[in-house]
Amino acid sequence: MTRFWKDTVPNFLRDFRRMLPGVVVSLIVVAVILYFVDLRQTFAAIAAANYAILLVVTFLGLLWLMLRAVVWRTLLRNRASYRDVFLTLMEGYLLNAFLPFRLGEIGRAFLLSRKSDMKFGEILPTIIIERVADLAFSAAIFVASVPFVVGASGAGRIGFVVGGAVVVGLVAMYLLARNRQWALGVFHRFSLRWPAINNLGGSFLEAFFNGLEVLTDPGLFVRFFVLMALNWGMAIIQYFLIARAFFPQTTVIWGMFLLGASAFGGAIPSLPGGVGTLEGAIAGALTLLSGDQSTALAVALASRVLNYLYSGVFGLYGLSQEGQTVSGIYQQLMKFQSKGAETASESDSTQE
Image 1 (tube, one colour):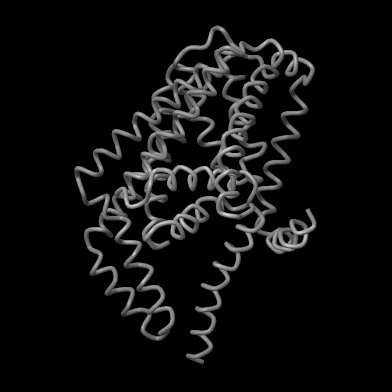
Image 2 (cartoon, rainbow, N blue to C red; image 1 turned 60 degrees about the horizontal axis):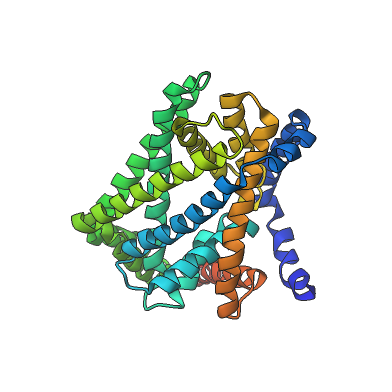
């Protein structure tokens, strides 16, 4: 505990200004939830839930995570063992639950680079592609469900906007992967004044473009797309069942709308782990569907508990096997980022 306070708190305080917008958003959402929700009814709904269904949801959630590891390993072109990929994935989810700025995504690339022969720069684009695909699927699912939800027609615009941005992003990454030599040449021409940046950035970009090669391999991309579609199909079933455990009238459309809303809610700036915003998105979507905000919050809290259960058990196991802690990884990530910044600074000083 002493080590945690000594190593971690100073970094959180130093980054507080960057965290402040997310903190404010989370606190506002939590305040709104507490104002409108009757917590006694929420706890009563939790006590009355169908725990047999929740047990099935727990099992399906584990299968979902196992398949998600296969999805990521496909993007990595099977260059790391399934065990390393699965545990690193869970470690990343654990880091996202407790660290700011979604450092778990950077942490995944950082940790896996130490367990495999892949470079950090090769792993990072696979995570970016995975996240962009997540946005595409969540937007499509959300847009498909909106017409069936009374009072949510205007929300469909969010899905179309996100979907459009995702398409542009994928096209841009594809063009970079197809024209990597041109892109590298442009970078080197513009960075000649700063040798350190030219050398370091060029090496990183080469590895980064290697990671983007999945977009130019039709067979690999189709396999990734099919696995991702199956993964999101399982997620729809999960959200349908977790809502069904509290609302017997739940339909598959409810599961789709809930999944899309939670995906966007988790992307809003907030405290680590989407505290407040994720609950607000799930509870808000279910309130729109059912009119019962107290029971809707019970569903959101159940989802939160399951997320912490998976990442806590497997993420902590993975870190313990490597002799690491959440605070220790945070310190290493901060040093990793600082090293890059110092290199750029030294290059600027040399030029002056």
